[in-house]
Image 1 (spheres, helix red, strand yellow):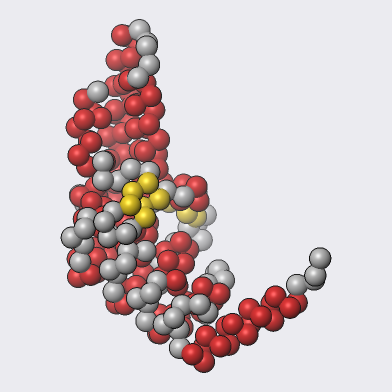
Image 2: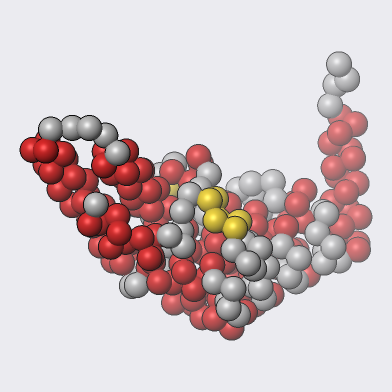
Length: 215
């Protein structure tokens, strides 16, 4: 049970579902484990969403194994294998973004400040989907941070920005023109959306509803 205790201090801050004192819901969605495809090459990119999800599954398997009555030799062999796989994914996360677990802990801490979140976004590589998604839904993310995240290729991050109460008018106008997904309907109900744009988007939504055949 060495690895479970060893990583507990860090991983205890990022379980499958965390609600920190700042009100940030840290939830692994089923869609988070879907691999992001590079448009140019069609190659699968192992983002932090995917690697973190794999590590969480492996930790659950390890916990289950250690609560099971198995022959000692098999228990030790399977534990070693699982620990190697878990450590490999921790190394992979740190390769994506140095000190990854510590940075996740900072975002989830009650002391998270707008300036710190802005700095983490500037430092994070595009592949760190998980960290950037957490920041995109953080209540203390400021308008400047959200404007940068509005350009991220991961749709869930742009969705969070479109509904965020700190997103400014320019960012929301940008998202309303997103051709890759219908973010305009989220922008339509964001209180920071300029009134003329909000009116146009709500009229569009109304026309869309009227065009649907009644049952």
